[in-house]
Amino acid sequence: MNEERKILVEEVESVEKPKLAKVEDAVDTPAEKPAPVMAPSPYEAETDAAKLNRKKDYLEGFLAQKPAETPAGEAGGDLYEAVIDTLKSIFDPEIPVNIYDLGLIYGVEITPDNHAIVTMTLTTPHCPVAESMPGEIELQVGSVSGVGHAEVNLVWDPPWDPQKMSDEAKLELGML
Image (cartoon, rainbow, N blue to C red; front, side, top):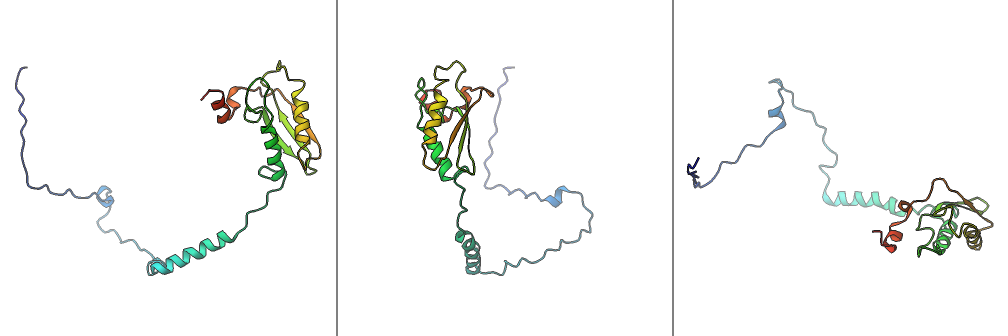
């Protein structure tokens, strides 16, 4: 087993370029294959300037469109966003994170009459602010300009867990 291995080195001037593989070579086809019929493209004879003008026309109609107005009570609407901003200003007394980023708010609905309905939970049913927090949120949301009446529904199903927190809240609490 102590045989000495020899490596042979050969110097060459050039190497023949390998043939490129073609799909036709890999597929068994009859010898008399008809040539595919291709319709000429209407854009082949088009000059670069004509192509550029055509693209401008396409974008012109798109860019001229005005964004659709979002109703105030729907997500993205002014009233909805004002309620969300208010919820982001309310902090849990035990955790230095706002209740929205903490994941305690399950839903915000604005009715056609501009009444705000907030569905939320607390970190635990034994939370020390279980009695006062919903009332505080109702007062804060009710004070938003444009909101006629605020209602807070406190739910326990599904239960809150840390996965409901936003990345900002997790970063603030050192969980990321």
